[in-house]
Image (cartoon, rainbow, N blue to C red; front, side):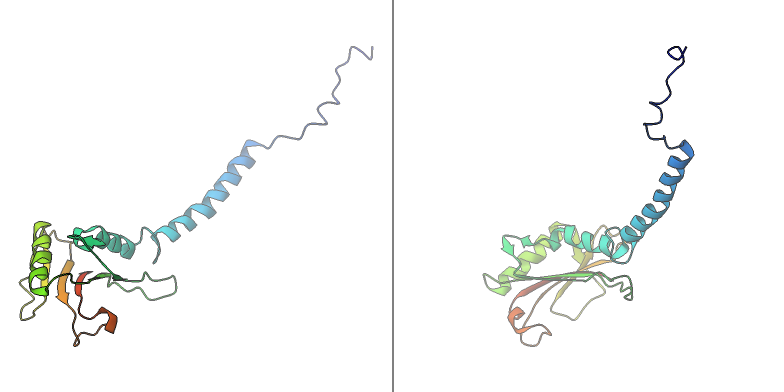
Length: 174
């Protein structure tokens, strides 16, 4: 008789399965804590998807924001620093690249201006009276406030001494 009854002692050795409710509640709790944190990081002040980060990437992806233009490589780059969490949000995003002139500036500056014009930049009629060249996109849409400046730095410029005598290509948002 003892042999005909089922043996249940093997069930005691296996761990109990978690209930579906427990698994769903744990996944929901993990999602509630992880997803908003990730979104806050991504869209936060210095995050990858934040407004200033997107603008800075747009400046770097513009042909005039390239590291090498017309075979000339920038020897110094200055860009806007993205704000941290507890720093005031600064809306001014800029990218400045300095190039050593390999030839006389009188011939090199028009080449840079021609290159800019061939990539959709046109003279900015609002900026006059300066020897620097200011431009905006010719296909400007309502929310495109990108601005380009091509200038030379000299002893009167407010730059470090090592940057004087170079060509400055500055992109920013107005």
